[in-house]
Structure formats: C-alpha cells, structure tokens
Length: 268
Image (cartoon, rainbow, N blue to C red; front, side, top):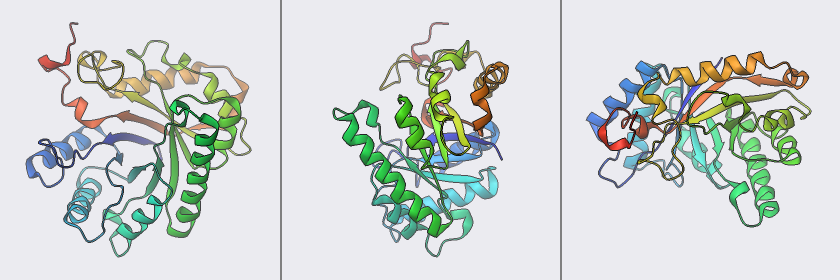
C-alpha cells in the first residue's frame, strides 16, 4: 500500500505548539484528511516518558489521525539508537490506533565532518532499530540526502524503506535531481522500497534554501508526486527492476499553513 507522508513538528514549548491545543490539532487533522495523507512522521518524540501528559496528548492525536483522518502509519524521527526503546515503552499497553509504527532514522551523516565515522554510527543505529522492530512489529526507514554508491548499498540492505530527498523549486525534470542515487540503491541484494521527499519551504520560511513553497501557490501538493512518478515511469533503465516506489512524503506540515499568505516572500 502506497504512503503519502507528512513530516510534523510538535513545536513543544512554543507559542504554536500543536499538542494540547484543540484548535490547532483539529486544523492539523483536517489538513491531513483533506490532503489525503496516510503517513505521519513526528519530530520531538525523543525521550518521551510513556506516562507523561505529552505521551497522553500524543496518543490522543495519533488515535484521531488513524480513526478519523485516514492515517495508516505513524513514524517517529529519531537520531539515536537508544530511542528505539523509547518508542517500545510508549507503545506498550497502547491500542493499535495510538501506537508508533515506524522507527525513522533522522541523522544527516552526509553533512557531518567525519562522514565515515558518522555513517558507521548510522548503520549501527539502523541495525539496533531493526532488532527492536523485528521483536515489536515495527518498521524501519531512513531519510537520505546525499549518498555515494557504497553507502547506498549498505543502507538499502539494512532498512525497510528509504525516503530520498528531491528538494527542488518546481516539478520540472525533478526526477533528474540526483538520479544516480536510485541506481546506486538498486544494487542492493534485495528489492529496495523508496519514496521521494519534497519540501514546501519558501523564500522566507526556511531554515535551508527555498524549495517548492512558491510553486505550491499555483499547484496542489499532490501534483509533485504525480509529476515525479510520471517522469520516473518514463525512464527506461534496467536498474528500476530492483526499486519499488511506495509513495511520497512532504517536509514539513506547518509550512503548508504559510502557502498563499503574504509572509512567504513569493512574488509569483
């Protein structure tokens, strides 16, 4: 079953905190339902105390996402091997609709000073996640920006799903953005499940470069994957036989709220 994913920041302790604010939670769930999102990846779940108010609020939000908004899976974006145990502790005794289903590795080894050491750390994290996942009916996945051919194969052989970033300003020729990454991943010894990630950041609401924020002023968000997939399907490449495209993902929820507002810096 294909995923349509959305990264979500809880913004704990901020004025725009999502958890525990009934109005914001309702706005969020409506957006998820109306947009057809089926997979949510949450930040800020590290160190979650299973008996805390935060855990109760999160369980309530997860339950409503799955029971009323069409969500099939919930992931936790994590950057440390020990956090797998945090997820298991949270899940214990909770109903399926409240549970976290996916251990998502969020660790940008390609941006670290000692890439080789940090990549090894990433692999050990994935191996730990895999062991925990196998024992607890969970899935593992990793988000990647830039990888080389060796890293690609190593990663693909130790995770269930790989989210590959396609951070462009428009959907034109988007498939060509780092296309070699898919070819390298396809060299793994098992079929590799991938999903592209698109970013909705615009000129003025980004911690990075501006990406599809302005494009979204004129295009529905669902169009990004339609374009990407049409371009992928048109590729005549033998390596595609070992790649399974399983949907797509967007980064990040709150930036969608800026689309069409005057503060985005879009002049189109």
